[in-house]
Image (cartoon, rainbow, N blue to C red; front, side, top):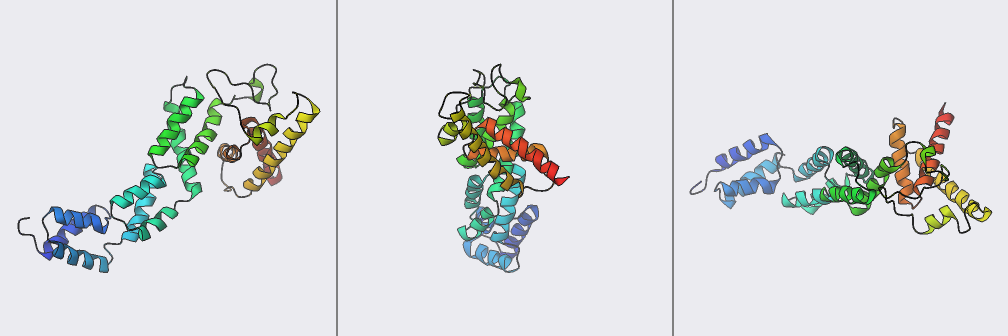
Length: 272
């Protein structure tokens, strides 16, 4: 607009833009500058629109985060960058980002992974599937700990046998089988692994006690968590959530599934 424009014209531009969707003050200022309005005219118009509540960066940040997290599946890292690009000040951005809890991010990330799983090649091994899914979540703004924990829990269903008695000959249903070449599951490491398999020889009394101790600790965690689960949560979702909890604490897959299965069955009987 050669020579700038009037405040009335600038106001009309802003109102048309706001009719389309909510916008930050910086977004509107940039559009007015593109159209040739002077900084003084734009500033007065934007101040007036702020006074009457048509521009509200705090409300905009809340709405943006809620919408982008819910419908686009964006994690906090990406959301923070989007708010920064839109000129949202930290004092408005931080409360909006804090409204997305760790449980919200975990649940949304799990949903994204479940939607992606059917499109993965059926012969893709566990390590490659893990890398691909973790990278997908990272691109959407999820932190590495959340991404890996969710992927590990969701892949447990894909790579676990449908029936515990489908395990290779010679293994107990509650003992992890040696991973096949197609699965390539890495062994559990650290203290949880040494407790699960024991320090003695297979089948010895010395190794049985650490396994029992490990299962009891896992059961205590699961029982405590079950009390905080939503009442309408179905068994499959509860299983994935609880197995994920134990996986993040370092418990082996077979122990986690066995304990969760037993505790959910016990909880169902107690509620009858």
